[in-house]
Picture 1: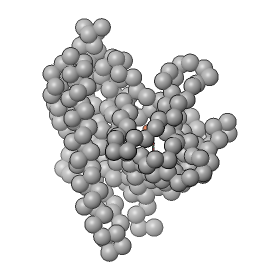
Picture 2 (picture 1 turned 60 degrees about the horizontal axis):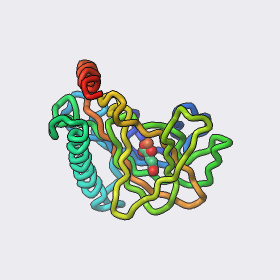
Picture 3 (picture 1 turned 45 degrees about the vertical axis):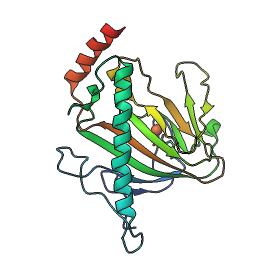
Length: 224
Ligand SMILES: O=C(O)CCC(=O)C(=O)O
Ligand SMILES: [Fe+2]
């Protein structure tokens, strides 16, 4: 298949080809991964794989436009998060943070019936590693979150999709940056036999600088 993913995971990944952390079975999802292109100095930035325009005319332009706009939404949310942390609204706009962003966009299609007791999921339990993930879903239920990962047995709650609204997942990086004030959300997707579609856009800086972590830890200690 011409759009099959490359070694940077860009392009198409079939059902069962992705395994979430601590899982044995692959996820019952297929995905199309679109990264950021350009001259940025990171191994993740390279040309995307696109379907033949004769087959899907205008698709690339639509996806690129969506990618750009979704990143704009992430940056707007980052401003609100900064204000909530009592720092300047543009705090996350520096080049070490979202000023020089690396985004991972995935078009996802889930299928099949999940059975958590057998470790069979649309997408196994995980938290996202970036700063935040913007999630647009159709109206088919499937996404669940666990508010406290340390409580056993874990309690999972469905997240309703609201027409015209995004779901915003806090990622591991923001939990670390805010010294735990914002919690990275453990989540998973259960298939109920229906097809389910979603688009996720994970945003993080191109490189994560360690000194920033330390600065944030100090800043967070002051906040607490
Ligand atoms: O499709 C969903 O609702 C969740 C997707 C997800 O967890 C992810 O892309 O990291
Ligand atoms: Fe996720």
